[in-house]
Length: 352
Image (cartoon, rainbow, N blue to C red; front, side, top):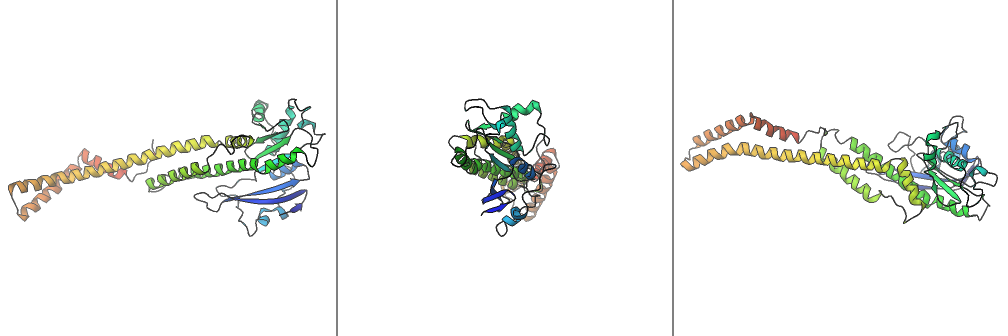
């Protein structure tokens, strides 16, 4: 599609279906724009910063209008809902934009270049979010140096690409860079988004394991979903080499995905051991009940057989005495332990 409105040109739209175990119809919409108006104020408007310009996603750019008869727009309260769209900005400076430029191709970037890159990625100005000087170096150190010509920075709610030499216009290398930003580099961030959504769902599923009954079935389903996610989506390399991998790793680090997934694996393993322990206790309890029931009855029937007694009355007396002996044994500490083991198979208390 092609839509022009208020200094924005929409080149097209992509829909990426990202089905999960619970949400089979979940998808992400990717809108490709070119802005002819100042970029940072536009990003602040998308982020709904204080005193920002009006939201650009209204009128012809309203998601409900763009996706009419194609997809249903979430109302912002679902599992995967985010407060505002994730933005990926690409800015090529002119010769007058000296804060972003290298003084010469081999010169070190001025600190103002990373500050500008951070503003674009965070959709904020110093007044919106004053970055503490103590952490500024760490934040700027996360920038991905794609080449001497441009850098990228990935944050939680946005990413940005910033050129470090003047854009010469049509035919410039930046045309090639923009193509990469809209394709393979975008793919890296979309893969990170998929991983984040699946880990969010696994976290919810893990927190509901002890709600209600059927612990073993829930743990088995959780393990299947974890295995499916790990074999399908959990990748830390998008290509054999190159900046796309660094962008994916940066997105994962921003959302703590490796740490969260490791915690999910550890807790799922604990729950699996708990289920195995309960099943073992239940089996041991069943064997104990069989022993308690079978020993008196077997002894009584064996004595009658040795004596050659075929009297029905004596057989009924033996059965009655066996039942009485079994009831007596069940009142002992061992009998109570056996019954407790059987009940333990249906109790779902979390491990201490």
